[in-house]
Length: 358
Image (tube, rainbow, N blue to C red; front, side):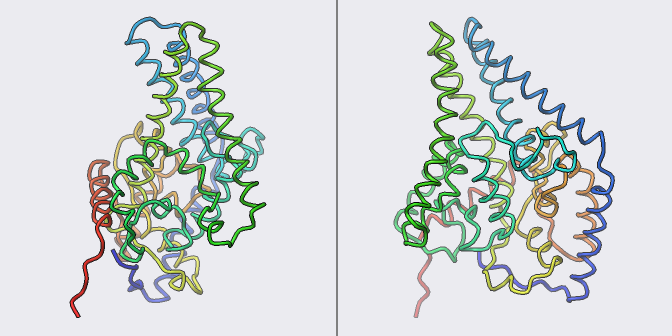
């Protein structure tokens, strides 16, 4: 995959597209209300109830069926907490409520990723520099080669294994993003700053490990091994699921990669087009969308990151219609189809580039 080609739209058409996308945004953002608050609070209640039920089954259940049910309930709680609740609250989608428990700047989630570090690496860096090579660290998560323009290195032979390890420990991949290890290794970050970032990351990891792998197993007494294994498996399921949704939203076939110079003098309309061409959606039902944090509507999320995510299904048909009107590609498909193209991309760039005959 090479860099994105310049849009065929005229400057006037880009401006018209910007105005129409703004109209779609305003139609929702000017009509936020109690139903939006009810949605997020209901998700929080469901997540907490699922966690309590899951932990109770792991602690007090008897036999393998109760253990499996406990793992699934706890994984369900963690997925909701990370995706439909944490991710969306920390995007500022509910700051307008004035509710301190929904404040994007103070919210913390149950994941090995410090909230403050995530707000910088994700909200600022990723959403500002989406798919810009050398700026967006989400592009391959500093582990995977995802485009021809990334230099091939011998370690990329092991890319399929690296992808599997990243999927299994996805919360740590996300959590280590703001460390910017590459900058530190190349002398572009002072040692004191790197140490402060590392300490903050390890502190959050320690809190998560203490709760899941020490506190709750200790409280379970003779059931400690059962609880320890259950907590580990619930975290693994959450990691695999979030990896799957995130990768299918960013690294499918047809997703465009940009150079920094491509975005010089970028208007809001140009930014909208870059977000559109750098994202992909997943088709599915209401439960699927909730469990994905509505990141199954990755296109709409990148266009409107501060819009309550449960409203994305409402605006998606309008965005799709605008794409048809302006001849822009709207990348959507089933989970199976989209992940198949992700794996094709990972395997393709595992191989060194073919030498062009002189």
